[in-house]
Image (cartoon, rainbow, N blue to C red; front, side):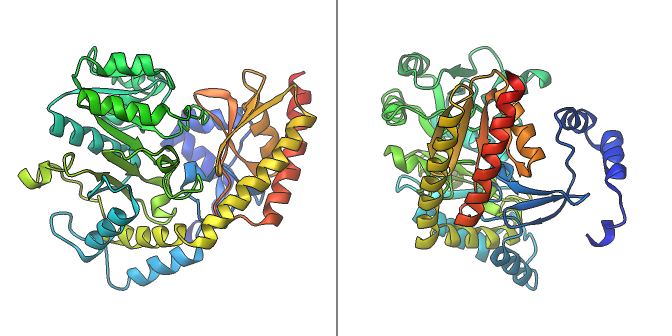
Length: 419
């Protein structure tokens, strides 16, 4: 680790408690996950003390293509010979090309791309675009949804994240309705005062509950009826994780705005995009300086993101996602049948997976057992019954076999622990 190779894990933990985030550092230790990441490669992480972990958390899909993917590393290194972050005020070769690439691979309803440094900023921008286009302020989102932690984004999500910072918004400004409840959605939109609806195609932090087959299409129709825009949050479900480049493609919806981040930078350079319709992006024709982001669309990030899009759309990658999804589902179903009283269900679309357990904090127990057995997966923060299980796009059969073996052992151990 070069300059940092002489530091001990204990020193890093002490620094983290003293200078970084004491609560988070101590909570992970309490949860039995005493991890400080050192080496990382492919779909493996290594603790500073050498413990090897299979990574099926992937930092929310940031490492869809693996840690330090060689093609992405080489792309960034080559780009550094000529580029830096650029200047956000001016047109750029890289931003222009990435924006065109996005226009060609996103739904036909979308035209312009506006770049940010991360998903929360990109969601903020989506709301700003919707408010500008509709001249309305109210925003509707899903109960137990999650869209990031910045100014507007945190208000869209669960009060677990907005209340500590007094970010719930004014009464009626941010409205939350249950997933799959069309009656509640129509009630929220029918007053014709909502700028937009913001929905994760499959809500991640809530444990990947799947929308009913016609739910998202029906929400889009309600938006059209009542003059609201449909914002599709694909930060965790995009970039081939569902077996299609964008999860929304499974549901036949053409959104007014689509947001991507996390895996968009391949874990190599932070970048996000808010891809908008002509209506939602009309403000850029009227006042292109109305929104500014110094690091939004950093040119190095654009170059990495172009390579991410190219890799993610390869035929062999799509086929591999289909294989991994089928193979792991078959193996997990076998494990579930052996532990049916504890391991109760599998939520899945492609390699977006949520494992359900009967115990109210079952996924926490499974997370600890997995960690002890060399696998890193995280429980759903807003539903600790569900384990977020997110294998990468490029996993091979040998990796899947090893993962299933460790999962079977860990789930059996966790089940015994809670009896």
